[in-house]
Image 1 (tube, one colour):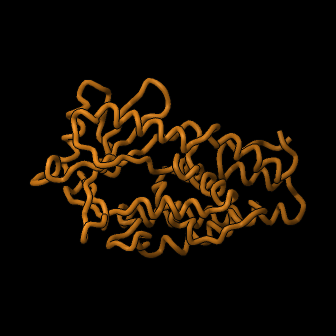
Image 2: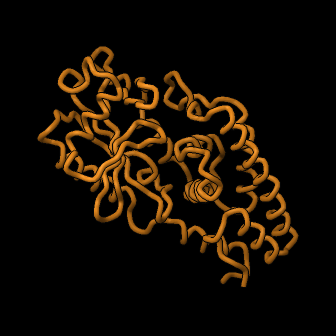
Image 3: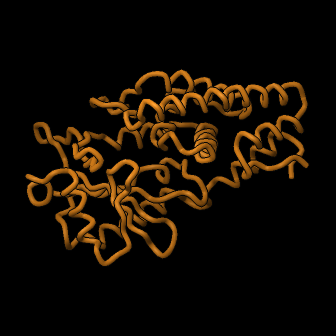
Length: 283
């Protein structure tokens, strides 16, 4: 058990991080999906996305995400979003699957070994022969969502290693506080926070302040398309998320001040209350 804040955060990051190459794991699962469904669908492309690709997944709580881009005329034309999503699940009927209820945009396929896969079916929207965007189904309200996931993937590649670790820590805090915020929402908020290369206590405190400002209004999509990153939040959920962020802001300020005043024992204990049992205890 650690006696200093730097060692505490090093151990915390180690505990919540996935070992090995996350991107390779995601790509391997992507190829597994193509192998399973390649004979059932005309697949134009398939690529991994989400936290494993960004390197921000949490140990013990990560699934792989795969976008499966299907031929529009053969598989999506004249279908409602929920029918399009159900089409993919029907082709996997002999496997253990479920609809991803929280966002209504994926079919989760369970594997015997980690990780499971959220399959997001999509079709291309083209403009003068170029891909303008992809459309994915939202079965919760039976609408289509326009998306450009590769923009976010490329944006995350520019994040510093310390920012990537910060995102994981915020995701762990979110997980311990009812998961009001989506993983994607946290990552987008982090992209508008400057890269940094040291001093986690200060930047955790500052990032909660950054989040508290961002949660007060709708956050535009980073892809330049219509819609908002946080439109999944109801009014009551946004209010509760804001309250929890505000509470964490005060607590991280106190934890940072303890470290600033050379009281690492108090600081470690305060950060432990913020992040939960995977943050190491003092001693």
